Length: 409
Ligand code: GLC
Image 1 (spheres, rainbow, N blue to C red):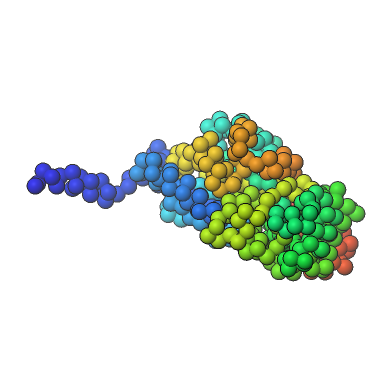
Image 2: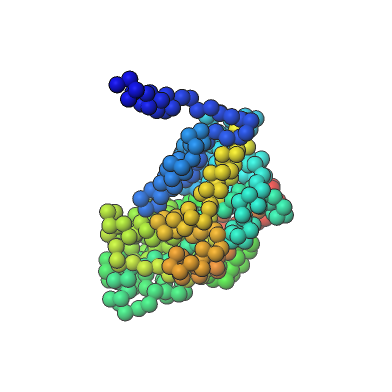
């Protein structure tokens, strides 16, 4: 009897023994923070579970999900990093942070991140644009590892367009026409997108501007004004619902998923969500094509915080998350666009539409002051969407404001 108990006692002792933090060799438990896990079936959490199942007990990862969109996520991470500026270790440190590609340069410039060795993470096999956004502007230093890439797609209702006998739009003029004439015949909203006052608005406005041959460096050009006017008039004419001025990725997805909209601009994570019969009313009745114009290049990087006491584990975790097998699984299950280039050649892994959208995707307006630039843009663009008459005046003003912000004034 006593002999039979021994293994149990040993097992219990093993389970309750305190985890030893060995700061010397940089291994120990870590915290990983990401935005809300909006993937179908919680794939980010499952990814962390996979790590925890195979990792040493001393190197377990606690997953923290931020409730916010990318801007709120950034603000919270930056505030915490600031608080912990002179701290090494401790429960408040987010050892590994998922950082939107557009915040990586400002984060590195603020000194929140640890420099990484490109060879340790095999970044030379990753998409060059994604790697570039994870480096300092001179390309000398790597501050994060590209985890997933992102490019926009135009989701549409196949049943409705088939019924109308038309192909999905390839230009804004076609989009406007279909959204304003076909959608109402089916009692649907025309087009939903991310037009709330946050980073999603910068992205959507940039795409409308590029589709009209403008660019973000010259928001006062006739072409850029045309692009912004196309969005603003859509709201004024009603084929973009006024509620979209509050929408982010998730709320616009909820609208399309409930079967209330003909078109939606969103990122590829939306695909597996639309196929999920538990919550989606449009299973089997949707498809996606590239946007009617270039997409903004999106994506998220993984960075190690300066405050981390367990940087060896943090780096090992990042290697695991960004390895071939996990990127493949996340592409299959979460719809993520991989950052490893050769995965785009694997038959059936990445849809041809996403591939095309990514290949043509453009950077926003890269700058170490990006956080200031985008907040200036968001304010002005949101105002314009409420007041289409103000396009000319507001975009002229925006050009001046951006110039000043770029110079750090
Ligand atoms: C997606 C993109 C990211 C972008 C954000 C805007 O998460 O990956 O780059 O900034 O959407 O909301």
